[in-house]
Image 1: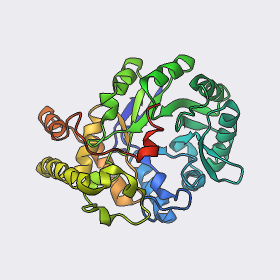
Image 2 (image 1 turned 180 degrees about the horizontal axis):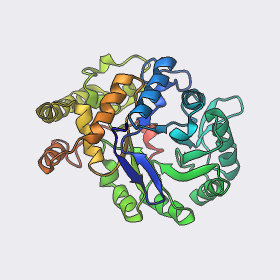
Image 3 (image 1 turned 180 degrees about the vertical axis):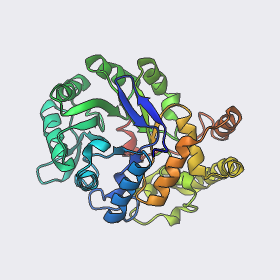
Image 4 (image 1 turned 120 degrees about the vertical axis):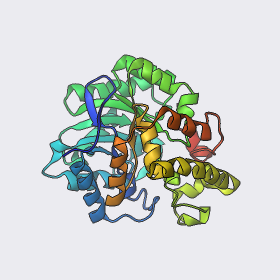
Length: 336
């Protein structure tokens, strides 16, 4: 029996659980275990356990691996495809040798190539939600969205979305084809899409918000107490939020969040997920372990009081500097 709440994602008809499963950490990216080593068997068990609890929304991308994460999901959903809602992304260019070029490609021809490759890797003939992962600055967004719209007409894609885009880009895209969702990093430690007016735009246009890294890339779990706790090849070492003096300032903020969680006898992670759910957004915390997917889905049922919500937002109010969420080069590709 499902133990998870369902919500409308946007106004185009897609109904999803209010907590999904981010699958990125289940695979390497370009040969690196950026979130620590993953075990394929345990990852598949995590996907299956999520489904048992009603968490049938899986988020992936062709970037992850590249391509390996989609293939892992194919194994997990085999024989039960229609029970899942699959969201994947394209836009980081991958060549015919399955290598990342680290360029962005939103050209019409590449859209068609990318979707066929994802369909094959996922072992399916349709993708529920298809995102442009990052805007290609050399291709008009209208061209990319028109190509994605064609995929909907062909029945290969159910709904379309964007990731890490500005209000201006959202409006341009939505004029070509209705967007169902926009994905962006969003958590108690990262609220820039509120400050930039992006959430306001999405609410005006009735486009769903999908919050990735809702636990601050694992920061809110409390398992990382020192920068040295991260493996040498963990990409979080490159993120200003996890570095030096800023790291320890953020630990102080986290300790205040934990006080509220302790009062409710829940984890700080569950509290952070309930905060996002209270806004009507879809959170997609990433995990590759069964125990964490169970804890995350428990959070879908939590109702926070107005007082608790206010206390949380007063700990890290808008404008609080917690450190950039990417290094300098990564920041250049968000909110375009």
